View 1 (cartoon, rainbow, N blue to C red):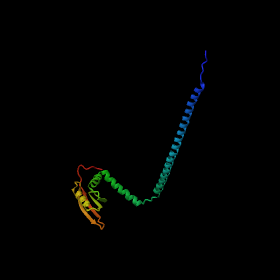
View 2 (cartoon, rainbow, N blue to C red):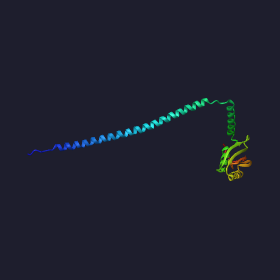
View 3 (cartoon, rainbow, N blue to C red):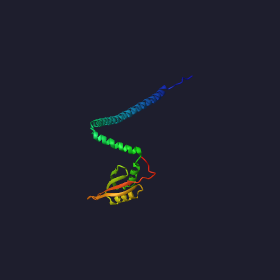
Amino acid sequence: MKPIAINLVIKKNIRSNVFLGFVVMLVFTTLAVTLSNAVDYYANKKVVNTYELRLKEINRRLKQKKTFAQNIDVNKKEYQKIKQDLSYLSGIIKKNMFPLPVVLSEIERIKPDKIDINELIFSENLKTLIIKGESNHVGSVSLFIVDMERSKHFDVELSKEEIKEDKKIFFELTARWISLENDQKI
């Protein structure tokens, strides 16, 4: 019987090549993950630093607001006046005496774009409203007055109209609110 010859060197070499390839791939994977983590770390560090700066700025502003609020010296007469005005308005709101949202939305609906309304002054009894405004465009003022007169909610008369040298038209309308049965309340 002839002895069987096995060449173990070749198999050992193949196994070591596969193992070496696996080790090299593992090293490159580890390096890639480490590099990725380092890049993420520095990017996140910049974000964290940005948020820390924002937080410091917010805290600084809060301290300024607190010191500003503490330094305000409220005159007692002014405080009583404001309190009285607020109680007057609260009474109106509680009684639903005047449909303010309806009035304002009606004026906004009628008002052309080229008109600026500067003041709305309500009378004590809330039956009349003085509208003061301005415009550079005569047609817009005329259209506004005509549309206010056509509105079913207002009875309007032009109280004052003034044209300045820069061709700016200042006007003042006195409008009486005409209440309808289906008006919305506040």
